[in-house]
Image (tube, rainbow, N blue to C red; front, side):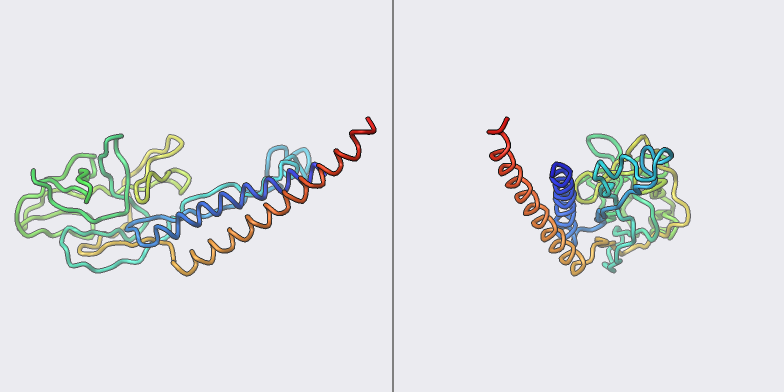
Length: 245
């Protein structure tokens, strides 16, 4: 009975985490540059102690879900015609400076600040390849596919576009801001293409997100019912056996 109770509890906890992730994904389906989180499974056969026993302690720990991980898949690009709107085709991120240091984003809805630098819609400085603010003089702005920014034909700077080794190397901070994780170091991105006059949307499909949310909710409810059944069985066993002790 105890084994079943803990298995049900592990399942309920995993489904609750999946429900939170599905709700967040769906809520941000319209957020520019949002990256959805997907659940992933870890291998029982390759868990701790696998060399000693194929059915190792991973099975007895009831842990098959490894957690949630960012989906780095491309979001749809929407043409805006605004010369300071930019989108990345590829896996890179723009670098911006916030109060807590340098963070990374796929949201390329930029603008020119009062002091003549390139900033986000929140007023955060957008950085170049050397993590410096980018000056934007008044004039006609052209942004090349390689991130080079020209104003009236003269080069003003270069957009910094950085990449990470894997999805596990970054962690979300809010809807579309990301920070390095586990000591990961961002590297200059290669092969990415910058599209001027366009913005990238979320990579979460609304229909699929709705289905994922309903499924996670139903599974969480099933695990909760299983917990209640095991709990009632425990109470019954205790009431019958303890008087005999």
